[in-house]
Image (cartoon, rainbow, N blue to C red):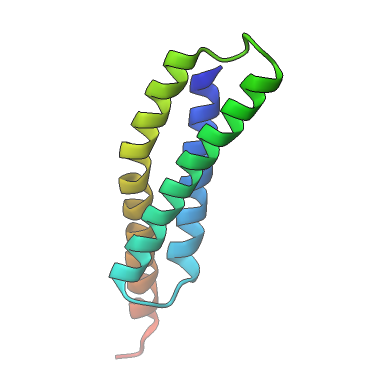
Length: 102
């Protein structure tokens, strides 16, 4: 159960980073920082939601596995989200550069 919720949190962070990379018209540093911030926010949101649900419904989540998944999310997802945002912005810049007549 912890793995499923961690995968959903990572997918949501990557999806939001993709949207940020597509819509933000700014420098690459800002896009990378926003992507990393999304990764950290979704990692913390994962922890808060799972601990809250675990408090309401005992024996649903295992505490040790929850902590391990949170640490892995906190380390991996911000870097991945920043990479997704940067790659999407780079892709968008290349597409727009091809449309130029010169």
